[in-house]
Length: 184
Image (cartoon, rainbow, N blue to C red; front, side):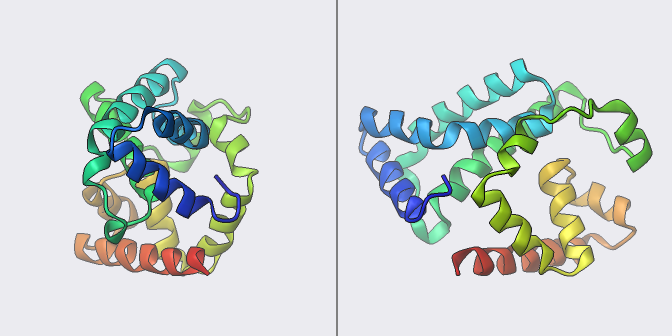
């Protein structure tokens, strides 16, 4: 997914999937599944559950591709958000979405590299890390907590000791800056 022109290629694949093109669906799966699996695994921390989420997400992608438009975001962002939301929903359904402090977090998680860490070594992750580094500390932390730990706006507000409206603004403005940075 980090190749030049990959975004427009993914956009074309999603359009083709929206027209019912099964070959395009297989190509989209091949191009995105490692990254999407890493997102799911980072949130649910169970390989079997991440595999289920990925499968459910691709069913949603197949069904919803006809409704996707580039004006609402890139295909890459769209498929990533489907996986992210399904993983968060799964955690909430299972009652496993809990807020951990940094010390407890380190004690409860295996320190061996996981799929997200391995995927982070890629070109796309390096670009994202570079763009994240340009953000101020609070928006960067809010985005990281929301997307990598799956915290809701309410949980973020409590974690960061800030009003929910402020947290929402940090995330919205931070994501706008990330998008602009990644498009350059």
